[in-house]
Structures are given as C-alpha cells and as structure tokens.
Length: 323
Image (cartoon, rainbow, N blue to C red):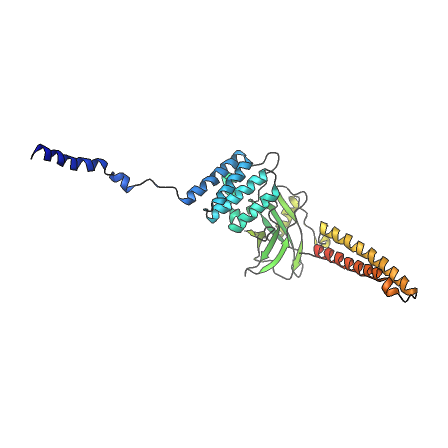
C-alpha cells in the first residue's frame, strides 16, 4: 500500500467517526417543554406571588396562565381559585366571588381542594381567613319538629366567610329534589357560621336526605352531610345558635331596596289615583256637557295612579314571596 492510499484510508475511518453523533445523544434527545407545562409556569408563579402577598402580580400571572389557553380543566379551575384568593386578600370580595363561581362552573368538585398548602397558609392581615374553599366543614341540619306529620327546620352550619354558598337543595335517595331554599347568614356569623333556620317544610320523610350547596348562580359547590337528630339541635343551641321552635316559626322577611321601591311606587300611585278620582267625580257632578273633553287629563292621572299602585304592590309581592 502506497503512503497516499494509507492516508486516504485513515481519513475515511477517522473523519466520519469524529463528526458522527454519539449514540447517547441520538437515543435520548433533550425534551422540549410541552404546551401544558409552559402554561403551568405562570400559574406556579401566581401561586408563589400569592404566598408572598403580592396580590396585584398574582392576579396578572393567573390571568396570563388563563390567556395561554393550554390548561386542562383542573388547572383552569385552579387558576381562577388563585385569582379569587388574591381578590379576597385585596379586599375585593365581589370579584373574588365571581372568580370562585367560574372555577366551580369549570370543575364542579373544585371545592375539594381545601388541603392545598397554597391556600391554607395564606391569611389576610387583621381578619379571619376568608375562604370559600372550606365548605367541607358545612353541615345541613334537619330537625324533625313534627309530632305526627314531619315538620322540619333546616339550618346550615358552614365555615364560609366569603359567603359563596347562597342556597341549598335537599334531595332524597332517588335523587329527586325535595327542597330548594336560599341561605341566610346570621348577622354575627364569623368563622364556623351558623345560618339560622327560617325554612320549614312538610310532606316528605326526613330519612336518607342529602344536601347540596349552590352559589348565587346556581352552580353546585359540593354535597354536604345532613344531620337529623335532636342531639344536633342541642349541639347547635350549645354552640350559640338559636334555631326557632314551632311556636316562633314565622319566616323572616328581608326589606330590600326592591321592597322599598315597590312601597314608594304604590304610595305615589295611591295618592295620584285618589286625587284624580276625586277631581273627576267632582267634575262629573257639575253636570258639564264638556266634562269628557275638559277632564281627560284628570282621568288619565287616575288611570296612571292606579297603574302605579298595582306595579308597586307587585314589586313588594315578588320581593317578599318565599323562595
């Protein structure tokens, strides 16, 4: 073999071996981050900002994670929970409630995430922990007060400082809805809040009932246990609750702005109709042949007043009707 051919053979063997990729690198290429992992990064940063108490940055990072559009249902619900928690710590309970409502719509069992350290370690300064995620502590108490026919008083005990739970539903063993009623919190309720029982029902068995808590939009928060016993009644009374007896079972009524508006409208309508009616009657008794033409505005005022009175009464009835 000539020297030139030997050099060529070495070049053929050495050069490809030098530039060929190694077997380790070809068999295990470096993985690229998946879209979901990339979207999880702002969510993790939002949780870190939440733990650090940087509320505004927390909201922005949670919104960035949602805007990425690459999260699964659990992560989307978690992002809305983080956003709601930041609003709670910032004092904006209205936006916090809206954020929690979206989380519940996305993932109905999202309230089960109560053991998450991200939320359990965060507490606003100067007040109790405001958490809508502690509904696992809720209990619906059904007290059988009937001597012959079942008459039950329904109360709700829940640690829900944000007030996310707005209604409850009782269902029987066949999943049929028995009762649906709003939750009214006691004015002095803090922490483990007891919602005083104003609802009384009859005509169904109190056995094997289950309760569901709903938010203001009708979203299902979670199922909670139902207690049917006199011991539960005594325990609630010992804890400072005041469940009403049958002798004081008059349902409480709320005087809201709608009731006041209805009362004002009905009063204005009554006065207008009375004055218009008196004026029209006086004109008719004057035996004036032109009364119909001359007193048309008076007649219109009477009709308008009567209409206002009816509308005002309807507003009061709608607002005070038991729901």
